[in-house]
Image 1 (cartoon, one colour):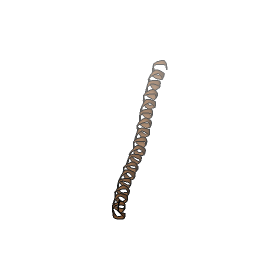
Image 2: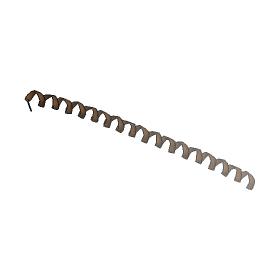
Image 3: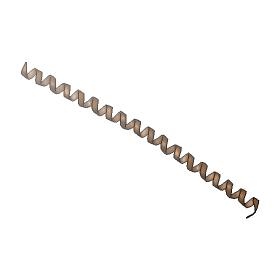
Length: 65
Protein backbone atom coordinates (compact mmCIF):
# COMPACT_ATOMS: atom_id res chain seq x y z
CA UNK A 1 0.00 0.00 0.00
CA UNK A 2 1.30 3.42 -0.86
CA UNK A 3 2.16 6.00 1.74
CA UNK A 4 -0.77 8.09 0.55
CA UNK A 5 -3.12 5.11 0.95
CA UNK A 6 -1.87 4.48 4.47
CA UNK A 7 -2.36 8.13 5.30
CA UNK A 8 -5.97 8.01 4.06
CA UNK A 9 -6.65 4.83 6.05
CA UNK A 10 -5.24 6.44 9.18
CA UNK A 11 -7.39 9.54 8.60
CA UNK A 12 -10.48 7.30 8.35
CA UNK A 13 -9.55 5.40 11.50
CA UNK A 14 -9.01 8.66 13.39
CA UNK A 15 -12.37 10.01 12.20
CA UNK A 16 -14.12 6.79 13.25
CA UNK A 17 -12.34 6.81 16.62
CA UNK A 18 -13.37 10.43 17.23
CA UNK A 19 -16.99 9.58 16.41
CA UNK A 20 -16.93 6.56 18.72
CA UNK A 21 -15.42 8.64 21.51
CA UNK A 22 -18.07 11.34 21.07
CA UNK A 23 -20.80 8.68 21.15
CA UNK A 24 -19.30 7.25 24.33
CA UNK A 25 -19.20 10.72 25.92
CA UNK A 26 -22.86 11.24 25.06
CA UNK A 27 -23.83 7.88 26.54
CA UNK A 28 -21.92 8.64 29.73
CA UNK A 29 -23.54 12.07 29.95
CA UNK A 30 -26.99 10.56 29.44
CA UNK A 31 -26.25 7.84 32.00
CA UNK A 32 -25.25 10.44 34.59
CA UNK A 33 -28.33 12.53 33.83
CA UNK A 34 -30.55 9.46 34.07
CA UNK A 35 -28.97 8.48 37.37
CA UNK A 36 -29.65 11.97 38.76
CA UNK A 37 -33.25 11.84 37.55
CA UNK A 38 -33.75 8.44 39.17
CA UNK A 39 -32.32 9.75 42.44
CA UNK A 40 -34.69 12.72 42.28
CA UNK A 41 -37.65 10.44 41.60
CA UNK A 42 -36.67 8.23 44.53
CA UNK A 43 -36.44 11.27 46.80
CA UNK A 44 -39.82 12.50 45.61
CA UNK A 45 -41.33 9.07 46.20
CA UNK A 46 -39.84 8.91 49.68
CA UNK A 47 -41.10 12.41 50.54
CA UNK A 48 -44.60 11.47 49.38
CA UNK A 49 -44.45 8.30 51.45
CA UNK A 50 -43.44 10.31 54.53
CA UNK A 51 -46.30 12.76 53.92
CA UNK A 52 -48.79 9.90 53.74
CA UNK A 53 -47.36 8.29 56.86
CA UNK A 54 -47.61 11.61 58.68
CA UNK A 55 -51.25 12.02 57.66
CA UNK A 56 -52.00 8.48 58.78
CA UNK A 57 -50.35 9.07 62.16
CA UNK A 58 -52.30 12.32 62.63
CA UNK A 59 -55.53 10.53 61.76
CA UNK A 60 -54.77 7.73 64.23
CA UNK A 61 -53.90 10.31 66.87
CA UNK A 62 -57.25 12.05 66.37
CA UNK A 63 -59.08 8.74 66.64
CA UNK A 64 -57.24 7.82 69.85
CA UNK A 65 -57.26 11.30 71.40
